[in-house]
Length: 263
Image (spheres, rainbow, N blue to C red):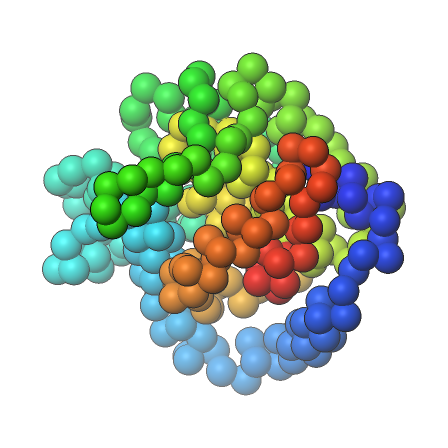
């Protein structure tokens, strides 16, 4: 939301590096249909592999782990789940399947966002509900010391901020303030700064990223796990997120560190 307001007021802030990324992405999009037609069997294998990697990697970023021997069973079967971690990985798989199969029917609104959260969190008490207590982002050091890395939006204001974020996102896309891929990255940053849920915000943000890519015609997330790429660059992910969130509440942040990471 704060980021999108920044775009509306100062579009000249788009850096040259983003332009290079956008050019590469545009070229790749042009080749996408050719790949899909030429290698259907290879893509079938990639789809299965990406589904596993996406469900497992996105959960691992948040510290949710399951036994390796159970991975295939949980992703492709209907097993009796042993614990909360398996429930959350299974729920993420269900959310991925929903996006892959019904991407054109899914609207980007608060109901969809809450539904994604409900899927990944299961039947716990606050599943699909915005947080009721403050949940600042805390960093813990090896020596046990902690610090508040970012103060998120207070529970009383979450509904207002989420409504404004979605409204501004739709307006940004409709009026074409910036390239839609930059809009996606900006939305992702603002969502993480709002931090609407007690837990599971990172996983929901990655599901929204996948859905928004689909809506723009970028289907690579079906074959290559975006979540795995983020996991493999986890330190950079958190570094750019912290850099771009500084001054967010005061509209004095620099979103381009995180935006360029996403691109």
